[in-house]
Image: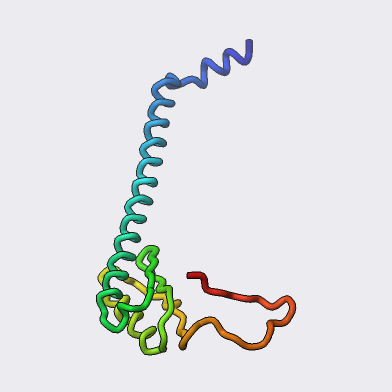
Length: 132
């Protein structure tokens, strides 16, 4: 009896409309987050493509296999070039593309064939190889 008296006093609004309004706000919020994520992902893909096109259009860099990956305006350059000057040139070209906030130049400078000969590596040594 005491419980039913407390429940009658605490029920100020009908539960149906209140729950419906809460669910509508929650669903709208979920939609906005996923839309923002999709828009940001598309912008990152466009920026990566723009940087890649600029790199391919540069005569000195066109023969190099370079990739650009971006996330929120930060572009990572990946690939190999035969000398340090080309690495710097790739960074300069990428930084001039509209929308690029920062460039992380991760391009490797590989002189000649990147497969090296030499002695057998020590036991437990970390080996890194390139697969084409």
